[in-house]
Length: 128
Length: 63
Image 1 (cartoon, rainbow over the protein chains, first blue to last red):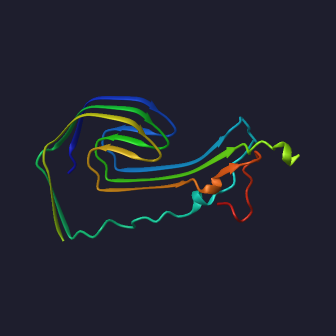
Image 2 (cartoon, helix red, strand yellow):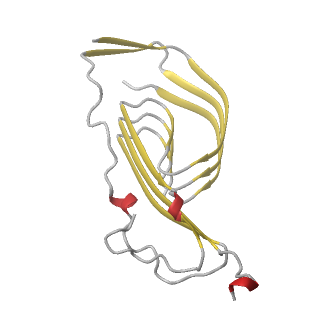
Image 3 (spheres, each protein chain N blue to C red):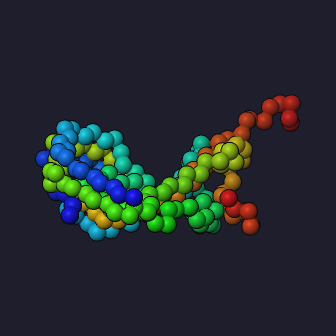
């Protein structure tokens, strides 16, 4: 048995990029995100960039294959309720999940590559 | 191994979050299994100083 979650007030400002606000129980959560973040010093766009596969998007991430061995687990809910007075969330983004309620299995995977491109030093008179 | 969990009263006041991002989870409730992973790549070579060139697939060596 899972406990009941009681939240009196929830204020979420922004939910973007496949994020989820779940109110109520769920069985399985599977969240995935892949981001290629490129910052350039100037506004330059070269068309279809980032279509090639970077290793970070394909390389397997080591995971626990199964929960640790527990011969017998007993859970006693002395109080069947988890209560929260208020929640304020400014932003939820990139496949993140805000979940009020219980779940069984939650898994998530984020893969982010961040590239910054800056202008080189200006060629000095000595170089010319 | 015998493992006993006793969940007593949980009453939380006010939660203020700035952001939940990148396949992360903010959970008010119970879960049996939580398995979250993240790979973030900002290697030194990802800071490119020099001419602005498109991100070209480096053949065989894309990192």
